[in-house]
Length: 199
Image 1 (cartoon, one colour):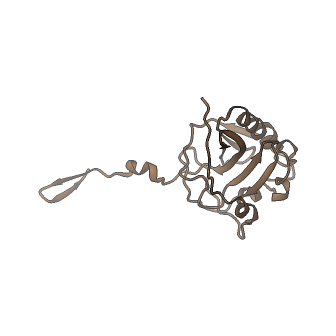
Image 2 (image 1 turned 180 degrees about the vertical axis):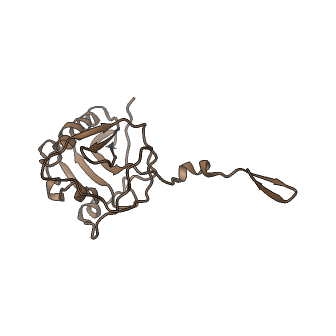
Image 3 (image 1 turned 60 degrees about the vertical axis):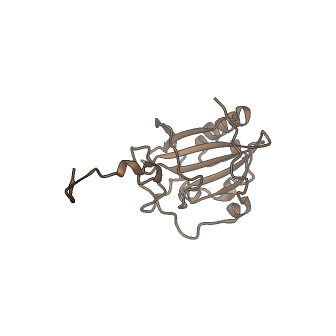
């Protein structure tokens, strides 16, 4: 099943491209549960750049995120054009993946030299499919020898029915509170003769 999305017509790409995190981004802890949350915790260990590590795909149910951009800096956002070149890159995960904006911006996905498995084998292949059929994709992965699990979501951006670009967001899978799951926190209470009994 395919669909077209007209994502965020008021998105200010200039603001995203020019922003640089001034402090190190906080890091969430890895979670076996597919329930992401915007609240981060202790600082991340950067991925070792001395030798290229493999990407390991993780089986996960589809994850619904409350926000397009997380409220913290623990994400990597890429705006990818039809020719597969990266127009814009932002977010604290760029640093965690031992990369700089210069390693990404105005570079084609297949020409990225760091984290080649991630960009060439996975993101490039799915972005190509997104441009062909307008389908959004999502996969979860971890870097070899690291326990943190990341989720990569790829969205088509259409203008008048034509897919003009693709948004790619990588973020850690975090367990925590989400407004959409608020019902699971209901505490059953019985009221008997004005006395409250906790069940």
